[in-house]
Length: 77
Length: 292
Image (cartoon, rainbow over all chains, first blue to last red; front, side):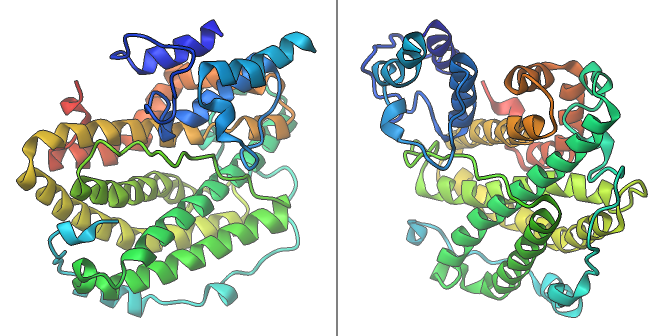
């Protein structure tokens, strides 16, 4: 999760706090241009590929959602 | 789309329209499609692959190198196809708006030609590669919400222009690269020929809309410059598709992609690819030097 936080903070130097329930998409912390890189980062962290044609945006909306969908799944496997 | 807030676009397009009419061709009969690509020939110029100039290229076997040219050619043409889909949908929605009445004639040529390009790129990928790579995901909440309607309109045409200029860098080189199969050279040549008109038009409409942005609020110009700089970097990064590395049998695709994107030889290559566009943006007054 630290790598995910760093990715977001690196791209948003004005962001003072990164709460786990901040809506990353509505707040534009992750915008359209950064989204692809963000998916590649998650793929690299989890070792799972993410199908670009079959995404549920809600899985990417907050750090909580990302943790639940991508990172814990790996820990459990 | 709020084009009512934008002044009518007036451009001198007679020459470009005349060229589009006199150079018109039937793409469906123009190409002589071979049954297969000659084995052992690269599908795109080796010097234009995303690993060119790095030790990562040298570490590949010859089979992997050829496979990389194949899958990066498919990625390049797939990016073209998805870029064309985006730009056509944007232009179609504007073509009979009052703002664009004066340029509607040229826009008809533009859409028609882009549709034909999309067809021959897809033919190449599907005939010889058996697939296209899917479009990268986009977000509905876009990256331009902080901009005024006229600046957003500028961004629409700027994205089209930047996309076309980057693609043209590749097409112009591959059009005459004798190491490539004839059909690959031809596709690049024909596209390069049409795109010179589209780029000329793109620069004219960009300049018009940038003038409107600056007139409304000069303070917004650096915000546009920042968006465009991000878009240039984003566009370059889309050339580095981990799926193409995997298909070429290269392991650890995501780490490889990261290493390649960071490599000094690739930074120099990116500067070459973007040189013409960056010079244009700087002369227009919206270059990266405005980005804080």
